[in-house]
Amino acid sequence: MARFYVTTPIYYVNDAPHIGHAYTTVTADAVARWHRLVGDEVLFVTGTDEHGLKVQRAAEANGLTPKEQADRYSARFREAWELLDISNDDYIRTTEPRHHRAVQALMQAAYDNGWIYSGTYEGLYCVDCEAYYTEADLVDGLCPVHKRPIELMSEENYFFRLSAFTDQLVEWYSDHPDAVVPESRRNEALGIIKGGLQDISITRSALDWGVRVPWDDRHVFYVWYDALINYATVAGYGSDGAAFAKWWPVVHHLLGKDILRFHCVYWPALCMAAGIEPPHSLSVHGYLLVRGEKMSKTAFNQIAPADLVADFGVDGYRYHFLRDQSFGPDGEFSYEGMTARYNADLANNLGNLLARVGAVVAQKCGGVGPAPREDSPLAPLAAEVYEAVAAAWGRIAPNEALEAAWRLVRAANAALEEAEPWKAEPGPEVDAVLGDALEVLRIVAVLASPALTRASGEIWRRIGLLQPISKARLPEAALWGGYPGGLPVVRGEPLFPRRRD
Ligand code: MSP
Image 1 (cartoon, rainbow, N blue to C red):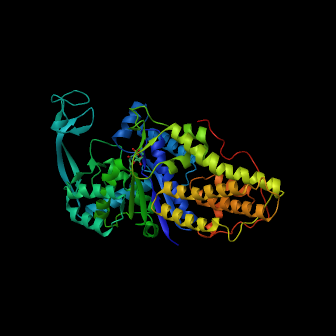
Image 2: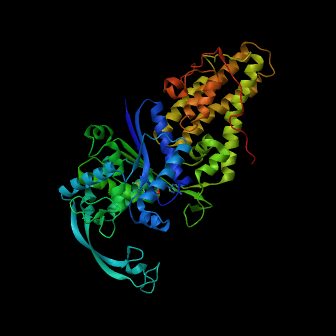
Image 3: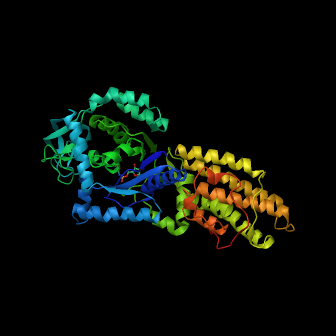
């Protein structure tokens, strides 16, 4: 049995979940569900990134302690994922003791291997910002944010000898040509590496809210070097060697392009420094834009998943983001686009097929679903579609997978329209075309189940299949001829009520 470990970035608890965060999470969930469907052993994890200045500041602004802030917002992410039927196997919070232990163990290994040294960081510092600036950032010699005098500060810090990993990273990229996808992102990462890497400061002494440096407890790790290690924590690093050997490095990281440098340059180097394999693969996607802009607190353009679920349902939500965004480039979200896609694919194509078949089976076959034809003209298409769907999920292209599955839905609708069984006398011809349509519904429900977590099971139920769809396994469940016939076909409320444009 193959193993598949898939991760989302862990989200900062300074902010509430919006559809940008949900985009990565829903995609990872659908991919995890696909792998379970083909029988892989899956570990799918998401969670929250809870340390650092940003969170500490948000807590202060809300009159909370950092821990209270983290508890409150971590719970909001967890609720959002429950709402969206996210099937994560674990939920990591970086404030958990297991994570502190893993960070300390991994960093200690890098330190013991000689890749971390103490040095002095000198720079222009704004105390109000708690951040360093370069000369070029200043406005009239003052802090660009607070317009206050800046101080020359020097801080003792620990540095990671990133510069020493340039050649190893270039070699790793050439030995693993598919590790970072799409190719444009791989080139971007390689460009950063070949452009010259400098050692990076990985600790802070002016901050308390973080994981303590094990060999010098005056410092905590800078939030990014604690956060990245979550992927190892979950796999059992530092606590469960057998689990770690099982899950590492078969890991697939999904991430937005904003955090490419950390994941595709620093993280593999840190793994090498600690003596573990770099991650197996990193899939980088673009932004979800709202009116051309990335969602942000300051742009007031954040949309909460719950608002859209209220209008389109969980399936409508998941289907839209999986079908309409291509994983890679930026994509624009619009309510109108979501409505149009929902009406076309779900209400009209799939919803109509189910409603029509239910009505005609009731009318012409006494409510008992006939079996499909072995030599149905749809059978070769079903085989072709299965191959296309499997290949698309394999390269994390949910939009292509769903597009392929809908070819089968459209073909079944077209066959019905041509045969017009509602006008014909009951008999073998009517049975044949309805049996084929029922078989298409059975197969499409399975192929679309990573996206349509609810409707897929409901389709199986309505066409009389007793086995829960969660027990279906591919490729067997996609083979033509699986619908036995002779089952009660029940009618019900429209699966996807049409929405007004
Ligand atoms: N905490 C870090 C990640 C640490 S991972 C070791 C972080 N968190 S975040 O809350 O800002 O979320 C980052 C991720 O959320 C992005 O990489 C991306 O996957 C997703 N998105 C946030 N806004 C997004 C859009 N507008 N569009 C698409 N994805 C977006 O960075």
